[in-house]
Amino acid sequence: MDQGNEARLRRVAHWQAKVDEQENSGLSVREFCAERGLAPSQFYYWRRRLSAVGVEGLPGEVDPEVGKTPAFVELDLGRPTAAQKALPLEIRLDLGGGCTLSIRRG
Image (cartoon, rainbow, N blue to C red; front, top):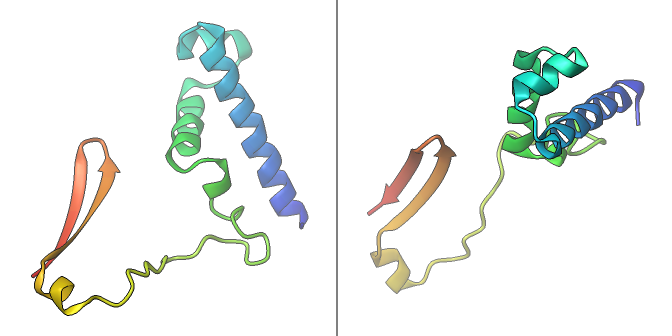
C-alpha cells in the first residue's frame, strides 16, 4: 500500500473513532467538538461521509490495486423469460433525504 493510501486510511480511522466517541459520549456534536477543539463543520462532514458510504466505500480505498472505486457497477438480472419480457421492469433507488429515483421499462 502506498503512503497516500496509508495516510487516507489513518485519517478515515481517526474520524470514525471521533464519530463513534461522540455517539457514545452523550454530548451534542457542538459540546463534543468544543471540548476537543474540533470544528463542528468538519465533524459533520466526516460523519456524513462515513455514514453515507461506510468506511470501506470511500473513494480510493475500495480497491487498493486500482486506487479508486468503479464508476459503474453492472447488475446481472439474468436472461428474462418471454413472460418476464412482457412485464414492466422497475428499478428504484433510494437516494436518501426522501428522494427516490425510479426507472421503468414497459
